[in-house]
Length: 298
Image (tube, rainbow, N blue to C red; front, side, top):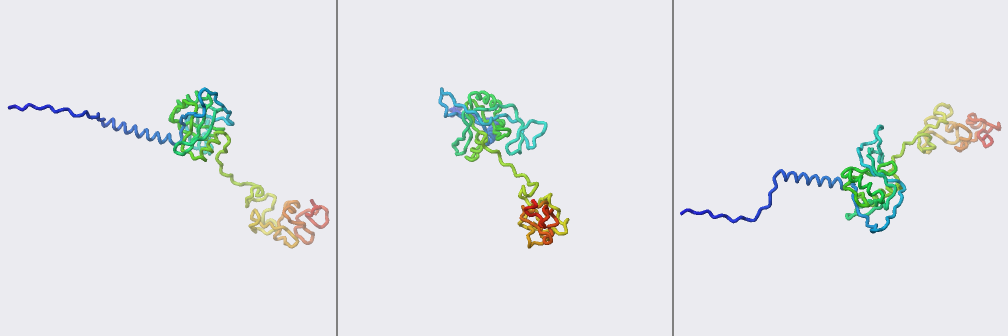
């Protein structure tokens, strides 16, 4: 007797299996999205809604104290800027930006800081109606590119454009602290000072700079006068020279020779009496009364 095969009942349908190539492609795409999210999350320009402007109302526009210029970054590099290019320095003077044509804002409805849900701070710029179409066109062509923000003649920031701005408000996000956001807001409003530059090295007259070790051109060099003691140092006097006043109980070895009697009197030195003070020979006794550098000689 021949056995007839019994047909098996079909089981539930199985989900479609992706090919190995498709799996690799999806993995690469996911990594790319993660990387781009990290880049855009650093400092980026996003679109926000202006909750303070009810519909069917006329917006209040304020003239900016200093215009704000938005321009795509063509290239950037370390300062100094190449002389053959038209570049803009950042506030710190360390980076040069070559910029493409952009949009200049001279008015705005509002510029303010606001708190994000994670506790960080961002900057919101509520655009004037005349600038909305310009910013929309500009950001449409610069998505995922750097957009320099120029205040005065310095780039104060260069965030990446995360999306096209089609609303009346844009925000600059970057995980700012309150102090950082307040400082950024002040720069955008033209009221904040740029970062402090390192102090210049002192030069010139010690009387003007307060720095020791600078030679006074009106003072004869040490060792040229046999009555002057060279090489002495006094920690209380600038220039590393003994500069003690020539009072009646002081010898010529410790006295200072001045260019004029006026300089000597200003330094509390003198007057000098003929036959008593050797310094008498250094100056002109104008009234020939035997005393040099007294008030009558001025």
